[in-house]
Image (tube, rainbow, N blue to C red):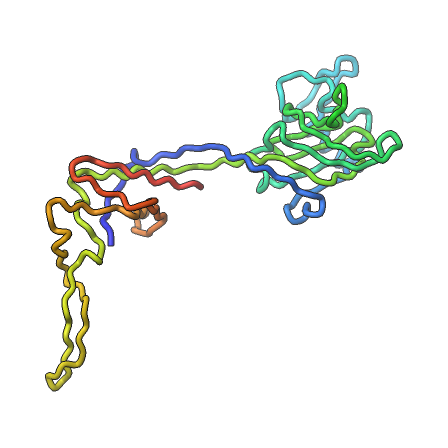
Length: 279
């Protein structure tokens, strides 16, 4: 059994934080997780990439000269090697579903293991995210940029020649998933909830059932008669709180919070129980 009290609007508020989860997914599990690797050889794919992410650039300076679209720059730093097709007309696209990456891929944590023919030699290596939207071959000095990562869209695009034709063995990244915490402050005054509703605190009595002839048919013990036991009626007795339930306006139970251990209800001071629900 329990007692009910209505919460005010000011007793509830929402806080948020972003949780990051590390993912390492081999090629064999791409289908399971919904990851797509697309070889963009035809004109429609290339045109779509250019329209969305690769604006027109000046051949002399490398600066953007004209573009009528938001091409989703991932950094305010100028990097002449970034966002370029490097004179080629092919690309490899790795698309990660939003269910995995959340709001965006976390910058600096995207890496791809590749296997391919680089300069005529079968080569393995790692393509690493620089944290500013660029993908470069790990270990190269100076950095050899081979593509780009679009964090809010969950895309890694490899555009440099032989690297675009290489096989990607696995991909690792960190997701960014917002968590919304509903904080409910359940305030209890010193004059409230100073008696127990626990059925075990009620005294019991014998119940006798008679048959039609007036003879005893059966006797049942420990039947609650609604009277509190003597040991919980003294002025020094205070109940313990073990569970808090939250109900909606139609009295439907929507959440239950359990205490780590029973908490005594103070008789002379107010107390506040905070119930947090992560969604």
